[in-house]
Picture 1 (cartoon, rainbow, N blue to C red):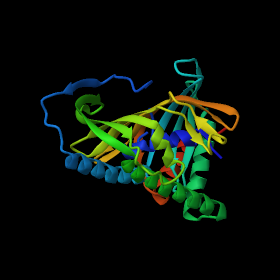
Picture 2: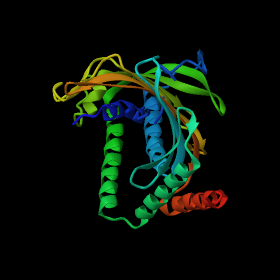
Picture 3: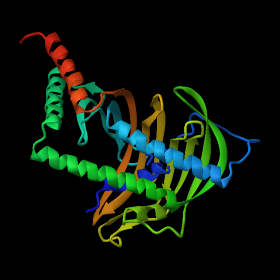
Length: 314
């Protein structure tokens, strides 16, 4: 069965050679974009290949690191591009070893009541304890998570063969650490590419622009346009309509670790005969390494204990 968000995840998986897409301003706004730097020598095809392969290796490492970092995601959903806000949700994301634990922090700008947040922390402690003493349900969830991780990595590696890469110059862009000079590449579908599965076939419908930090060999930004409809099961199971746009930004959140800080989805389609639309912007902040579950549970438990001690008795 085809799920709208899963389809978008496939598009985002471009950041592999680009999966980057984590979380995207509207239409990858030009804020922070600097002029194309001229007068610099173009890299050779061998240098481009080497840079991309090193960046993919680093992306695999970054993806693994993400499983030990908590963060805060602020997601704003619209009815359609530039339309009224439907939801405005801020959540704390805590990795559990078999996915993520989501703790609601605020909705529509209103913080959740302290008692509700304490209840969420109690749930997080139970889930992290379960990761260390798994029952059948958790073991099944962990197995599914591992399969998704392997599939993601495989799809990312396959993307290196799915596109023809054209160097488009060097460009200065700003981020919280200051101005960075990035290599800019244009990605066009390679007509000779043989998809490894039905999801990888989505690459044939996408045109993208990729920015790479040359010094650290890290994917910094991706903008992808859906040029033609992406059908599933010949269009019977559903399709993503052409004209959609996905963008993503990654930044260095710890020495040598680059993780998503911004996503933007503007995608429409249908699942069987039912239409779906994903028009949302996500900003990701407050990255903090909490480690694997045995380490993370102590951090969350201490926070819960401190919150409980600070709460007046009823």
